Length: 390
Ligand SMILES: [Zn+2]
Ligand SMILES: [Zn+2]
Image (cartoon, rainbow, N blue to C red; front, side, top):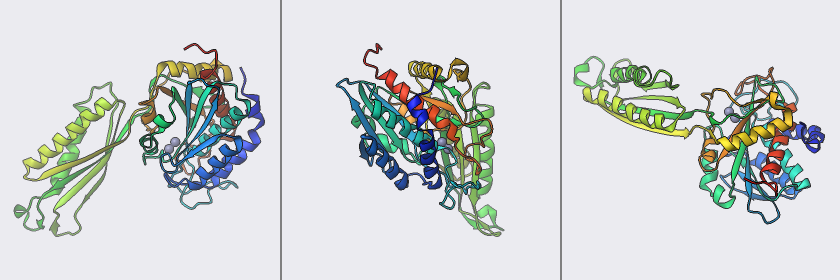
């Protein structure tokens, strides 16, 4: 039960890297400086670098021996459009952009393992270090997959971690099954017929129709979803009209849906369509639904998750590893990778005092770096051990 001592010895250097990235946050698909930083480090470690996989994404490849075994280790690199309120020296130098989700820390934990594995090479097979852009809703994982991520860099299994505020540093959670929610964004355009506010009988007013649709959508949760199934549906925007005396031509409703399965998401999409079209047509109007699902649920593969939990046990002891727990309604696009390759998405403690993710006072906890780095290092050495029998 111990961390990788070579990585523990790097702790001060890792913190410098992490703070450097934190001070220079970049939004999704604009991670140019970050991507350069990562590429430079990987090259310095003697790792082959492949850039432009998903625009600003990159993959480092480290191979040892002729075995065909392979592993993927993934970190995300993007920041958020948040104005940082922290006052420390390494706070954001880029006004209005902030590493408020700890992707600076995720990137450095993977760099730590890359440096260690390139120096020690105590494995047989291929390690793919996947540095993903644009996790925060812009589709970075899908962009990498579209650019042939898993064809060019085949992975038998894939692992990723997210820091967890509230979970003490030195604790991990590795739980099989569904871990994060599927997230959809929708727009419903209701087309009526504009007219004079004083002559409503000559128009088809889209505003009361939109109001009726909003009310009806609530029944999708209260009447069409099993009481023990968790679903969220929120209408978050309504836009129509510009003047006191004009009945607008159209109205637009927008919102988000979260579910824990894609089956339920598809069912809700078709209900949403039927309800809005039915209500609109009953009033002589029409409705058009635009429905996008940028996040699927992350589903942890059971054998990969048990394997990951075993590695965590060796690092921090089994009392510090959670193997059960409810999934959260947050979303994560690592889901698109675990749909293609069996894998595990772990949570690593960011400390009980940590501010929440996406909070303007959040900061990644540097003490967690050696834990995450050690996990990536050991899971690789165990997955790619020469004598390993699957
Ligand atoms: Zn986030
Ligand atoms: Zn995140």
